[in-house]
Length: 138
Image (cartoon, rainbow, N blue to C red; front, side):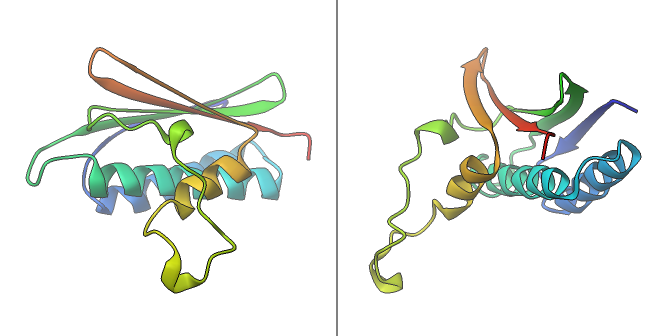
């Protein structure tokens, strides 16, 4: 299986379903442990943020996640109909500031950007599309 495709709803219970599917996909394709961990953690973070902050209370949303393997890399694409949010434009958190002085939020997006080799974003036709690329060469 060199591709995975899931359609989820904006319910935090879906985070566990995604985690199980990503783990099975990574194991079936024998992805290096570091790459598999980075991919799983990044997708967990993006999905949790989208579900937690992207929708009006009570609104039903659709989130599509796909992962493909090609050219020595795993590419994950997350598409959602949530509020516009570009994770590539998020300000880096001040990691040197005292905990009490830090702004709330931003660490998860920073983590995703640190673990992935590429993070891309586009919004078209009312849909956010985040692309994550993780090279598998180590």
